[in-house]
Length: 422
Image (cartoon, rainbow, N blue to C red; front, side, top):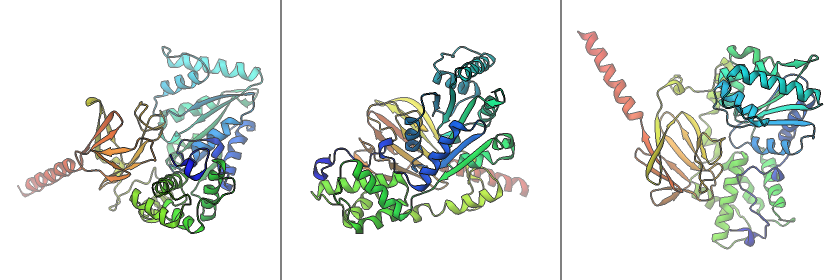
């Protein structure tokens, strides 16, 4: 839409992972080096973690593009699986059709295949994206599988990539044996202010800027302030600013255009939007707990009853229900989303819902066709019970279950006090 105005060959800030746009910050380069080391490390896992939007998937795609010819790859990114489904998914990646086999047969085929590839001089590599969703039973299955060896050399190299919950999950005592297998571990943090500028200029150059100044110096500070240096948020804000520039026929992104984009997105400064999350995460990490899930009273709110639900409709006909858990829920077309909607009108990563004890907030992830509440297109919206979200030919009807839960708790408390009085 705006490429002609800015004299670019392609949009520079798309959310779709594209290895050619990878900006190699020091930490991204180190994480990639860790993944590359998995090729020659004969034992142990490599674990890469990072927040949503930190660039993990783009980094993985770049790494996979450069694999040597002798590497046989299995890339699994659908991770909400049972142990049997996981083994089946792995065999499918290796070219088998194992859908009617029992677990013992799956294991036998995998072991034979791994030995066969080793004898042929091949290196077997398993890359699991969104690994924080793997169950404890699947992780244990993975540990057993990675222990298969020939001539004292492990046959399967493993890279686990996921959100910070993965690292905390591996720290749990019941996964001690798996944690001891982790050889290298690295966490992708946000970009610094300087790196944020370099990231933006790098993507513009790849898109065809050819040294031209497209973003004014004064515009970089608010971009960093409101994106927090998170690559996906940088992309969302910069793309929106370029759309605002297109609307105003301005071919240079100014500080004023960035602030117009901020208003369009209804964003507060990054540190204000997320300031309540990091201290709690740090507290849980020092205690060796699972994900930081404590509310203001110290209660683990992820263990509470589900707070909300979507009814999924296709052309106004109900097709599914989806329970919204606490935390972030990503909605999109591909299998690596929490809620997958297979439709040409849905972007790869279309929207996200952030669910906290007090509310659910819907956010557009720079999708092509947008999200609508009724007839109004929204970028950022606090959901209200009964809201109907339009995504192409699909609708999501939002049901807030918190009030019902609160009524049940209150009723139970009144009944207890009445019984005590009697």
